[in-house]
Image 1 (cartoon, rainbow, N blue to C red):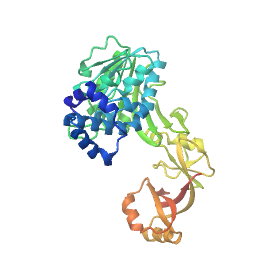
Image 2: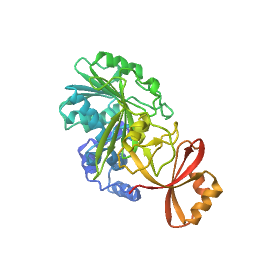
Image 3: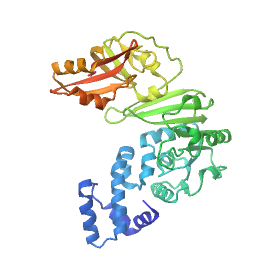
Image 4: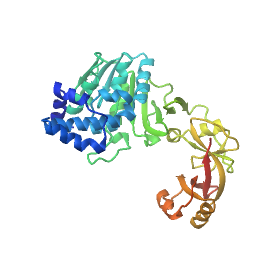
Length: 395
């Protein structure tokens, strides 16, 4: 999406056409585009409208029904914070008593929308002109939010009490950057900002090396419906305890829940034999190094000191982990496993692994599965031996 496309959409004709578009259907997009061009609609506007229609459909996963009134760029949508997570960011600032926040590198404005939605004054800064235009449209409902097209590293912040940053974590070739020192702006800028302002937060890659986490920051990993979506560094008034690592586990839908755990009072789990139940901790819990908290909740133990699987002798339901009933366990061997599954008519398997070099899709082909039954195969190391656990999800 370029500036010409955005300009076309922001005309009365362009906006009316966008709002009148039917739900996006990939199979019908080409024919719909041709019909619009045949009706005399400018081809550039047709392309812009179809692009936005497609992006709005994708954006429902992050923004729900709000997506239908927003504009997007492809890169901006990919990096944008999910609405339910952005709301948590905004709540940190509001709870800290911060009344004005700069969203530095605001992208399409997702976090700025959440901040403004809590009646905070928002200065949204974006150096890419097209993206800044998109953010301006998306923030149109909040008069206390203003957008500046400028470099976030040189913005005058004298009028704000806090700042939130979402640094770019991709190289010019599109490769992801895990090291926050190499993001744009880098970690050093964030730390300098935290020394100047009382409330600063920043997103970092979930795979950040724990050794790079500043001592005066709380690091929190967040998952939504089992997917790790971000890690954040929180400074000053926004952190409950400097140096703390925490995990926030969010579940959406009819059984929506949120659970936060941190490293305070975390038990050191024992290592012991495989029990009747196996627990796979949520990815945010694993990234935060808080597997011991899961072991404490289920009164369990690790199957190996270096592997993030917890086993226990009784079933416990917890949002912090997915539980499985152990049906069998055996040393890993292709021929033996193939025979085992064939004898039980298993034709569908979910393959999970930790501490195993086996490639799941290659193994799936080698198993030559036939039958109607299903099973979960957990490839891991137990007592130093490569093993496979046959399991089923806890009901």
